[in-house]
Figure 1 (cartoon, rainbow, N blue to C red):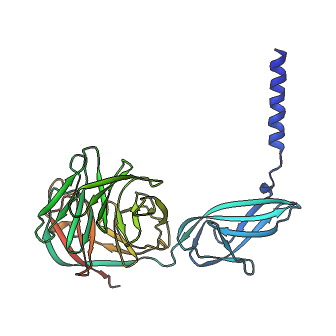
Figure 2 (figure 1 turned 180 degrees about the vertical axis):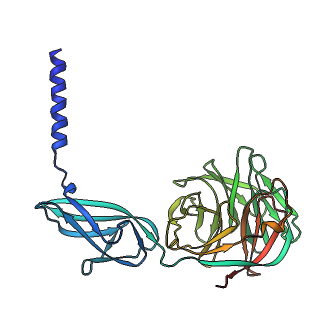
Figure 3 (figure 1 turned 90 degrees about the horizontal axis):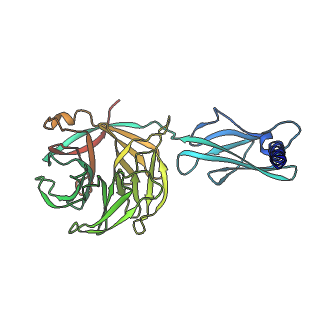
Length: 347
């Protein structure tokens, strides 16, 4: 009993000393202009370290996501290469001790998205049973992936007739998602299995598989000729090395007002990512470098031009035909494939 009392007393003393130990960072705070949490890219804002009591901060340096921010007249310019959630950090000394303060802030786009609409150029037949998840041209050849467990596939299609020229089906426990073609390889995602597949684009023979890294799920996929871009149902679009399939970073999709997390099927054209908005008849135009949503395409009314049936689902699937300089769009279980031009809406 005496041993228990001694042990308990020692524990109380240890806790008391730990609670009383001075944490110097609690005497300082980041003093940031504006509302302190959201800023437009390029904004000049006052930034400093505020001390309490007789404390002082010496040799203060500021960093945004690891990049040092020059301070001019007590202000910094918040202009990171990519937008979204960033870590703001202050490093300084006080009484000979190095101290670090951190705060997450949101950097938004400078401009609001421009609004676009569409003009139908041609209408082609499309497999009504295809639950379209990915769509991409390689030259004049259209590749398509479909979803639903037990009905998922990757296929090569004659876009003018809708004829399926070749098809490889996935095992029934996989839900197929987006695709992209780079060189002789077709890359395909699955939804929640944390796994993607590689196919020979000529034969659609499976060549191998790869696992996801930090990305949450598999949604859309595209490439710029060197890097693969992958959406996962969050605000992030991940960059993948096409050889190792490792995630090398990400961009976050934002407007001038908020962060956005509904990117689905993807297509890369001239530095922009065109992304279907999940469950909506619209598409975003995203700067692939910064993540800024620069435009929104309203495809309202297009669904009414396909055969209406009980299994009809939403717009999904976007492919750019370089030779024709047009986009091709369809939807899940739509019986039509539309060739369209994207045009800016008149004020």
